[in-house]
Length: 127
Picture 1 (cartoon, one colour):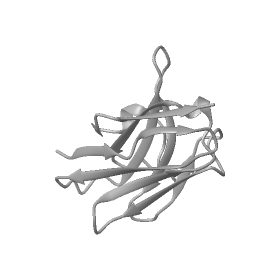
Picture 2: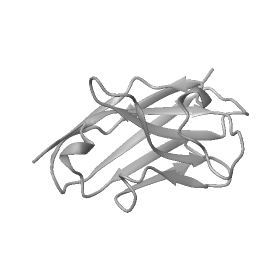
Picture 3: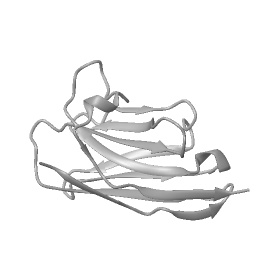
Picture 4: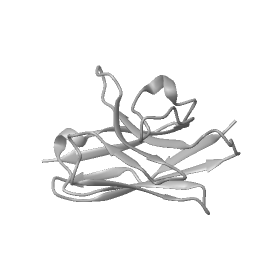
């Protein structure tokens, strides 16, 4: 079982930047996909960015393309989410997740594809 711990959340003004980190402990040979999801109260959790830990293939939600960058450090068993040009609508609890790769060129945003989840880190962007 893989345990995930997110960090790096906080409060920033619109236009600012934050870098989220997700460190994993434990090992799963099948957990080739790592992803960032976010959720606000009363709304469904949505995929933000994903990365394949071997190929490095990435996938982004349209709402964050050009502003967010997902990266990995396999030696540290960690992934990161660099968030630039933040907007108030980016305010959410951000979760890291990991799971198997099911094909298709990149890791999906299908929640059921991700077996392990972190507790989340809060990001608040003020206008």
